[in-house]
Length: 67
Image 1 (tube, rainbow, N blue to C red):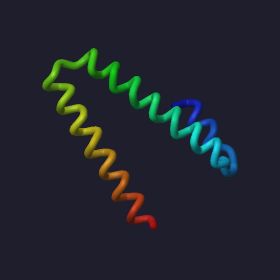
Image 2: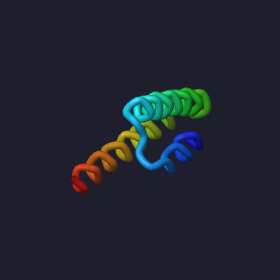
Image 3: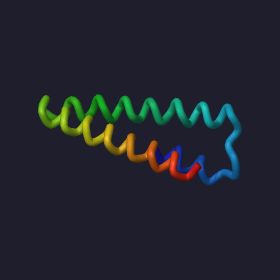
């Protein structure tokens, strides 16, 4: 995530940079998901994934409102 924050400081990323950032974010999400799955029990993991989905849906709605 720190790499992404630094890259956002640049003026405007190119399409290739955007693709690289997206790939990095997806990898970070997968790593976090795997880590949480190993830490939490099945019920806790299910609740955590539900919360993550809620946050993702809220962000999508927020982005729609801005457009």
